[in-house]
Length: 194
Image 1: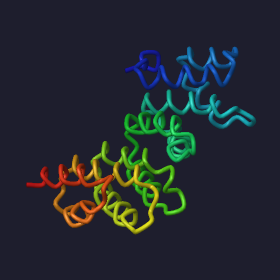
Image 2: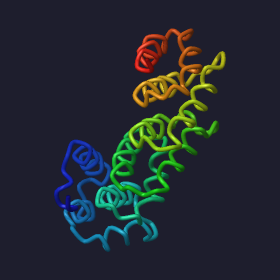
Image 3: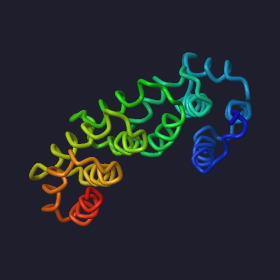
Image 4: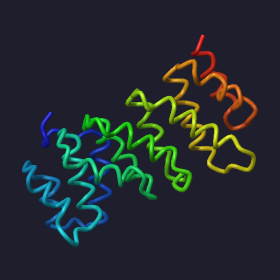
């Protein structure tokens, strides 16, 4: 797949959002249309670039397997804007960089960034890396504490553990059965372990 053929739903969503953020500027049109990876890479490091421009460049380079996008994509993965996390997760999954699982695990388990961890959790599930199950278990264990408000992240952990179907997750999934927002998915995840 070339840079010019990366036109699926995730890219269209990013392109529409960036067009709105940029006002459809000439810089936006150039970044969306260019096939020049060097131009995209320069955009990542050039001073005073708007976030939408860096996001387009990182996404396109990541989807093309260019490791220069890695750091920018990891920062976007844990961005407070969930749409940026979605596009970063998509590109990181295609990048194939061996550092990705460790970075996603660090973001998913970071107590200070829990509110933004759902995309890191979903990426870990998609990657099926050695780090995936331990990170999802650790994150879910923490999120089962009384009064914990990040149930969407906990639900993503439950769903991911069910998809990964690793028996190490059985104890934490059984504990999740007692949480009303998680119980149905936890039960389904446990059924996949049999």
